[in-house]
Image 1 (cartoon, helix red, strand yellow):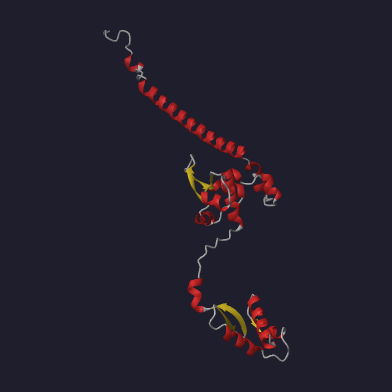
Image 2: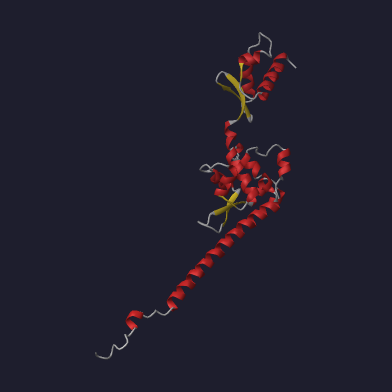
Length: 245
């Protein structure tokens, strides 16, 4: 193998392994001082002229790039997931562990108001969806996770979510008071108990309202059925009023 051929191979290897274009000075550092680097690169570019990879000049540097005519065949479309910010991740975790849950309840747990678009990001990702409306003033909508959420995180169902101790061991549990205070509520039994308590409170409120309505209706009926009292003044007849004096 000739010395020039060895030098061509060395430049080829350097360009192939480089993460970015290489300049003449860097290439010279691997070759004898009297070598014409530009001539070697030009020769190498000629050898690659009809191949799938070309040696191209980028500014005053060189790099290996795929042949332009193959661009259409090499083009692929990838769905790049949007990176979630801290607030969105916290919101998703709260919904996952406390579903079904309303927006005000999410804000109460986080201790801050939800910024505009936080829920929209999770909706676009397909990880949450509107649940049934909560019985109460305004009938607020609740939020729940979707099958896409389970599929993305490799869960069979929400029962497979990591528990409080697992989160602490992994260092993923937020240390803020608002989150820590709700940490104990991450067990299924307590979540169910909390939901039952809310439903019972709403049912009691509805029953109380119905009782008040019945009491008011009954009072109105008694007023309607009570006969009017006679005016004693007009009904009384003075003794001897029919006799003259």
